[in-house]
Amino acid sequence: MTDPTANPDNRAIVIGAGLGGLAAAMRLGAKGYVVTVLDRLDRTGGRGSSISQDGHRFDLGPTIVTVPQVFESLWRDCGRDFRADIDLRPLDPFYEVRWPDGTKFAACSDDERMFAEVAKINPADVKGYKKFLKDSHARYVVGFEGMVAKPMHRIWETIKVLPKFAMLRADRSIYAHAAARVKDPKLRMALSFHPLFIGGDPAHVTSMYALVAHLEKEYGVHYAMGGVQAIADAMANVIRAQGGVIRHGVEADEIIIENSKARAVNLTNGDRLEAPLIVSNADAGHTYSHLMRNHKKRRWTAPKLRRKRWSMGLYVWYFGTKGTAYQWPDLGHHTIVNGPRFKGLLKDIFMKGKLSDDMSLYIHRPSVTDPSAAPKGDDTFYVLSPVPHLGWDDAVDWKTEEPIYREKVAAELEKQMPGFRDKISTELVFTPEEFRDRYLSPHGAGFSLEPRILQSAWFRPHNVSEEADGLFLVGAGTHPGAGLPGVVSSAEVLAKLVPDMEVIEDSPRLAAE
Image 1 (cartoon, helix red, strand yellow):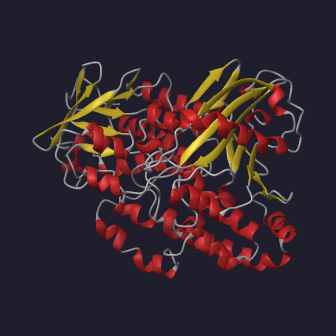
Image 2 (cartoon, rainbow, N blue to C red; image 1 turned 180 degrees about the horizontal axis):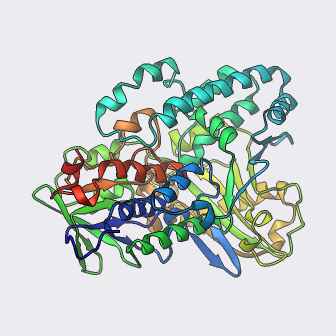
Image 3 (cartoon, rainbow, N blue to C red; image 1 turned 90 degrees about the horizontal axis):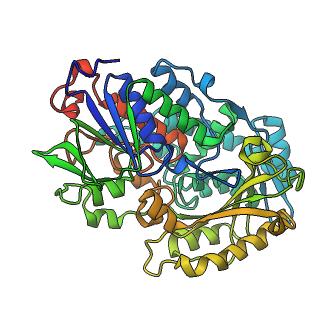
């Protein structure tokens, strides 16, 4: 680690202690920077943080770890061992998908079991499913291995992959691609819903997201004991061991640009912190519309941001239940409950901005794997429903609609967890308004910009900002996108753009290029 007194210009500021910001701080610390991380919340993790209430730990955002090697690589590059810090448990099955007629589909990494699950729904689709797996691997090679951790701020990097994208029919949606391989509508849903976990409409985002099937098959789906909060806390420990500082309860108000260079961050409490290198893990939309509101922008102007498509909002009901540890034995760690419609519901949420009466639900029950999530004998749940974001002209008034919508969610949950309402001991609800106010997410979007093909790679806000030298972006709103692998990989991209301290010049961006 560089002696902080040896070079007064080895300071770096990271705005936001989400997983992307923490990963960025770790990588900068490994390069010899002395990092100050700023966060308005009282815990690290951002959308991956937690709230403890009445003995229950509610993991607020991401719940699973797919591609654990992105964390292993991060720890290794910091001279640490991820597996020594985090107890990662593989899940089997990964999740169960359910439909109103009682059909169930349990996903796992074993080929023969998966073929049997497909055959249980439609034997004639097993052949098409095998083709889908081959498609998934091909897209993994191009889209994940070839692009995720690679800087994409030069348009040539995107242009040169277009022939492969054309060959793989990246212009086709993931739902359309699944429909070309299997005929049963239930299987089409089961093979295409994954982009919802990063804010994308399966009917419109690229078929490149078929690569998720390969990621699950090859690397599995895992749960970190203690939740994603445990990962965030371990990241914070590495940062502090590197000499970094994490300041909670402070909010960045403005990034100060002087002579086209990022020079300082003003806080809402009136403090000013100066550094020659600034990294924003705040939402890219918030970074450009608010933190740089007094700086004339070349690309990310307010009109351009308004024209972008944002990911859906989320309605999340967190609750604890008393004495239910052995109740509902068929309800595992992850369950996805479909409503009567799939494509129609997607259209309502993403294209019409309409809050529908029917819904699909994701039920997270961590206490079946991790007893620390709930008091002994009790359960902890979170139930998530995709809903429209707040950017529509007739946006949902959640102060009025929330109790009504909660009753509709409860009616669906009763079908999976009979009598659960009588067992609730504590509860908490997040609507898109909480995402807007707690995470400063534009329109209360759950995952920043929607990952459509023309809002990805070069078309997404760049990791190295074109608006000011010395300013970089990480997190869900920049390349490669949302989700744990995405935000952690954005810090790996950052590390390739920022020079080590021994070669740093006045402008880190210029030195990197």
